[in-house]
Length: 159
Image (spheres, one colour):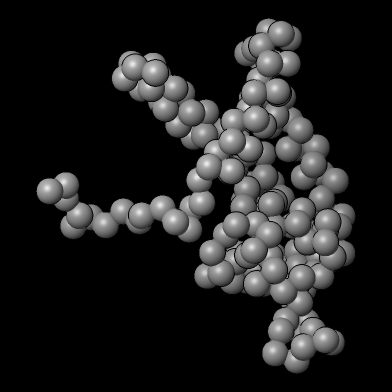
């Protein structure tokens, strides 16, 4: 791949991410949640009550991010924390009744985000995108471990 192709690809992926996130935020605001919250709520729904450490491992978010998000979800009345019956040191996070009532509406909004995302494509392009994007995501997931990537430090300069 030459530089111009790489530039086009990288710019396109960046724009897709930015625009998709904007659509997702707009769709989820009416429910008082953010795209990361949606992911956590869906994970808890799928697995049942979990510890914050389990939630961090399943979601790929850092533990401090999970702590903050769980606090926000608890303040919004969407999750409940309670002591684990199996381990007194652990706290379980589970969905509240409000979350169970809201999640079907969140799913509808999430489908609308996907439909808006694909709206400008022809049916053939949409079919191809539905095949290629998950494959690209899987390839990146297999190739890149975020924990092993260097972190940006403003004082770092190439030598």
